[in-house]
Image 1: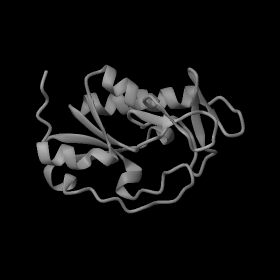
Image 2 (image 1 turned 135 degrees about the vertical axis):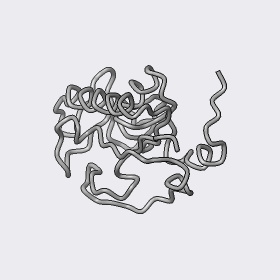
Image 3 (image 1 turned 90 degrees about the vertical axis):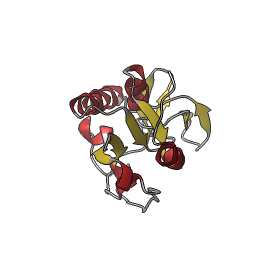
Amino acid sequence: MDNVLISACLLSVACRYDGLCRDYDLKGLDKKFNLIPICPEIYGGLPTPRVPSEIVGERVLNAEGKDVTAQYEKGAREALLLAKRFNTKYAVLKAKSPSCGKGWVYDGTFSRKLTKGDGVTTALLKKHGVEVFSEDEIEKLVENNCQIVT
């Protein structure tokens, strides 16, 4: 079975910014792949719970105005290290997150509005050839078993 990085919060680990955990429907992902849980925010040294953060221009700022870009970048590098170590081609990451969001992230106004873009970890993984899926795309990964067309 192929290895897949997955946001630990999607596995009901209480590592979300608010410290809560939810149940997510993995749609059989855990039966087709070896899942490797990651939380880039924790890898970057941020606590749980933590002040919510959003991407503002080229930086990541929390709702109190503190620049946490360095922590997000460190967490992204750690996630990439695991992707390389476990030879993962795919990742399933938390939608809208400033770290893990794919395609859409919160716009930096802390108003719950979205803007096009990728989170810090998603961008780095994609740059290094890891195909990233959001939790909304799990079914696509499971059904297609990730036949990448290059």
